[in-house]
Length: 282
Image (cartoon, rainbow, N blue to C red; front, side):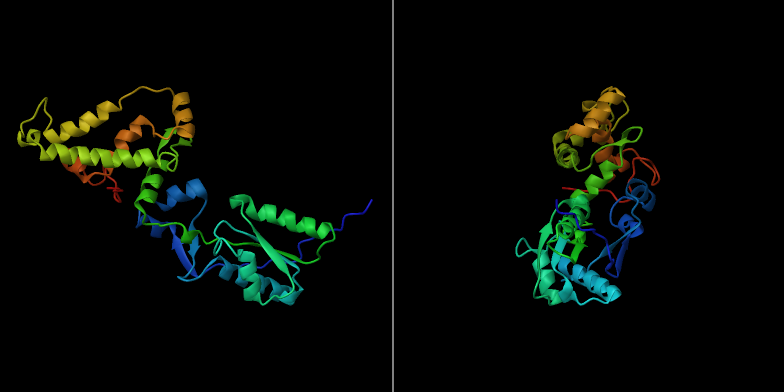
């Protein structure tokens, strides 16, 4: 039986762009905070590539630094494996583009797309090539340009982040991405309902009914539609599987985004139902 060749990681090279986007920077774009992001993701800052730069550009810098630290000619590389979910293009692969930028003529490569697990999978694949005796020097690169697919000012992102911050029970939160479509509809629907009411004949009668103004009654009517009692188990299941948010947040979410609500009920600037960076989808 043929023995397996020993495999080792002989060097590491790293590169990140110079431009920094901190949690504080994000809090000035959407309604969030450094504490909220840090507690849920552990992220305090992220690096942003300059316009015109791509995944292969960062990969090139990392590989060149690796070769420099090992005093190795890039042409010694026999195989390039690039782990990425943000390739420069669908084809040719980012590994091929990286090969060209490095000026490597006698090697081959491919991309492996597996999101968070991508680098680990790529590392195991690269190790297998060495262990099998097919190659001796394999370079595994993990490179992603997430800023190329994320719009930090996107209104949908604002809504998704808002609802992801809502807790339904203990440490269980609403899934802002799963519920994005319905949350968008709720926010837009309530706004349109108010606009329609104010444009109709009912709004001309400004007298109060049961102590509430016409505008207040619109918001109270919306709240009553979603009034319910739910067990914690049901809320957790809903958060995990249902494209609708908890009914509580189908009320509080849209209303806290509307200055009309704040005006109707004379909410103070620091009130719980007043968001400093409200999301508006329509």
